[in-house]
Image (tube, rainbow over all chains, first blue to last red; front, side):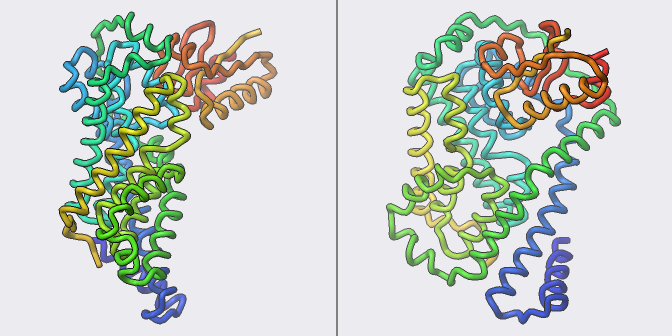
Length: 331
Length: 77
């Protein structure tokens, strides 16, 4: 069913623009047209359908499910909910406080907050259409493991010691009465929610898709085959930590970075290095950390930062070491 | 004069919410004061988890989105 977009790109690139098929420019333009049209159309359809299904899931409900769970189960559930619950990163702080003041441990809350930017329906959809289901599954599992293991580690070191004093107080005095009744939604209400979500998410991500695919297309058309492999391949062990460090000051969401991942992988950048770079860009950003300063002391913030950098580097090395090449990556 | 508080840690939607309420009030000729509350501790105190949220007379009346015209007019009447 995706062949329609190839036909459209063929027609626009070779007929309308009259470019010959062999030049770098035409390759880049073809790639750009095919991928942007495909992704934007899929986004509209999928955001709407998924929003219909999860209309009744919000952070209040997640808090209810997470409160009072054991730390290990809570951390795993936190990561799962982080992957499927929609919320804007500008609500990170109120969500953190809302969870903590309900007595939910820091590790469980952070498992939720770490997984959330890495995995969402838009990211999964982009990965599926660009890199195939094997790679998507790998990405989702690795993303959730970062959340779960990060959360468990924070529990292990008793991270609550290093919360800001008012947060610590709220955690210690937590009282949470477990009564929550899920609202019953009619189809009309679900449709309204899905429509609002669609407009909201689409208006936020379309430009990221264009920028991301644009850069991906430039990589595709202009970077010589195997150039990345020779210069930043598996032989160069330092390329993984370098990729992680490079990813920190770059601030992008998963929507913008995934089309670039495709470009990097097809040009021979090892999968581990690519994953490390992209996860670092999405999950370890300075603006996010500066926001977290409002609720965490420097020590905890620094610890969290180091945990993430080490985790992404290890993931990168592991995948490079295993020579992991997901099927379905088109060449 | 009515005081309306907009809770939110400085995201664009929160700023837009505050501006929108002020605009609707000005259009209707209602004198109000819009206060932006960005302190996380204060936001926690209202039990709000999704911003922007709106507080009138210390009651949370809205949370999680930019309110629509009808809702804001209702608050002002």
